[in-house]
Image (cartoon, rainbow, N blue to C red):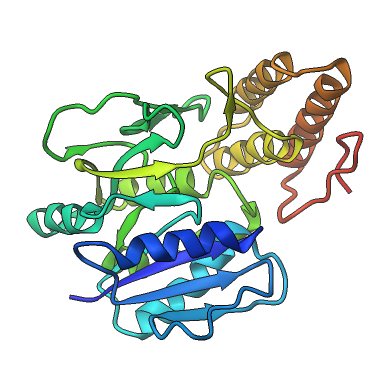
Length: 293
């Protein structure tokens, strides 16, 4: 059985280097690691475990995973473990995930229990996606001691069965970032696969929050609003997801530390709604005022 870890890299190298160090101390280590260097200049040439793909531009999450998955499947991978570079799995995390996968042949996507880096409380213990509004909800408490089903697996650290990866079409790289995990979760369930949370496996995730609340950037607001609509429109939904996305973005604007920041959040929301309804895909550049170019 061959497990390949997939790590999209962007930003300072310290996070990715720290993750590689964490993986080297695991009770079960990935057989190979594929790092997609979206930032450029990541020096890992001396590490024989690691294959570095250098696309020469920021591919975003979906395309990075797609390119790494192609290499992993060509190399004979049975499992792909996709990891955000700021994720820190517990030493026995992969071991526990593989045990759960071996016990359920139709488990196509498995996730650990994921905790905030600060505070240690649970960020993800399973979740749901509303078929009407496409709101995503996280559970914040494990639903027992044994693996249990979920309707949604976050893209932070999913373990993917290679058979599922071959069967489903690739992650939607037109989303660039955010909601790819929603899209894949929904498609996997449609295809009859089971999604599991394995509470005995744990990951620490560096989720940004202030005063105990999640804080999102202008770019995050834009992509979350737009991509909700792009995923929803393929399933015949528009009005309810648009209204729900606008309401979510306004709640983020209400958390702003200044009127100028709030205006940028609202502007990013408006552009996200326009582009989502128009079907615009791919990366955008948000100027200081929150407008996308």
